[in-house]
Image 1 (cartoon, rainbow, N blue to C red):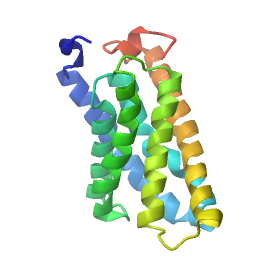
Image 2: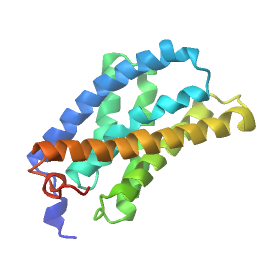
Image 3: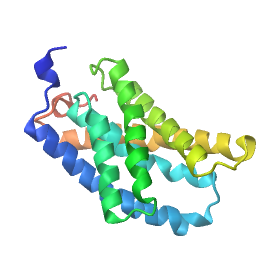
Length: 193
């Protein structure tokens, strides 16, 4: 692939940053839901909500289509949520980049040439697996594999696939349809992503 195609433009940095800030605010609010009303849903079932935290990695990559887009967007969103006072605090400085790197891996495996549905689903699922594995070892270390850890990992992976994978593809297509992404390949490839 041509190196100039991989160079980040100013607009790429701006859009990745705007997505990061927007999702950082969403993460902060989603944390209030996770620890508030959703707390009534026992874990591992509550993991069905998890995919929202992984959307910026997939969405950022689908829009920007440059190496590092998934990593930058999700990591920045995690840092913004930390700055806003996330209930998980500074642990997100580690967890966010781990999840982002897992999503980035899917796009890297395909040489940053394919940004279609199967790759988006793989990226979302890998991010979900990284997130849930981090959680079961860091946040839920004393839990049983059969009754908690495996269901938690599976539910998180499915939530990630549906919400972050399918959701990001749908959101990219919707944004492309408005013309707001015309300066990006995602906006010029209508209707495919």
